[in-house]
Amino acid sequence: MIEKELVNIHDAEVVQVDMNKLNKRLILGFQTQKTELERLFLDDVAVFRINNFIKQNIVSRLITSLTQSISDEEVTHWVKWTNSLDSDVMIKPEAVQNYVNRIKNKELILLIIEPSWGAEIAVICRSFSFMDKSSKTCPT
Image (cartoon, rainbow, N blue to C red; front, side, top):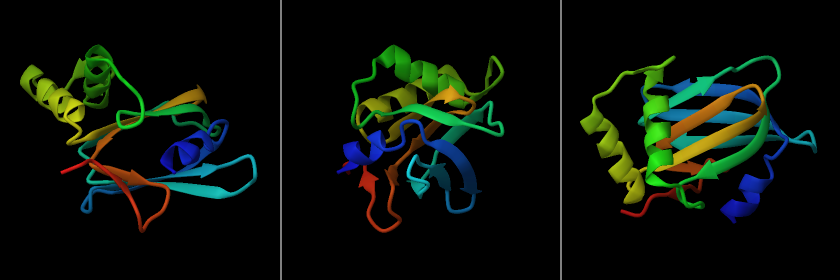
C-alpha cells in the first residue's frame, strides 16, 4: 500500500537524483535506516524543484495531493515555488491557476518532500511509485 511506503522514508536520506528530461522522469533514491536503497519513480513530470541539496539530506515527511488534503493556498504556494528561482515566479498567473486546478481535479499530483535537514523537494507529475513496474497514477 502506498501510505506504508511513504511512511518508510521518514528519516531516510536522499542520496540520488536522476532526471531524464526527454522521458519526463525523475528518480529519487533514499537510503533508509535499514541501509536499503529505495527509489521513488516520478513519471510524466511537468515541473520540479530541489532546493538546498547538500551532502546530507534527511527526510522529515512526504506529502502528496493524493493521500493528504492540501489547501488551495498551499497548492498555489508549491506551484509557484516549483516554477521559481529565488523569489521570481517564472510563469504567468493563469498557468499557476491551471496547475492548481489540475492538481485539485487529480489530473496531476503534487508531491512534497519536507526536510529535517538539507533538500526540500516539490514535484508536479502524473504518477509515482516506489516500484518501477506498478505506479500510483491520477485517475483518467
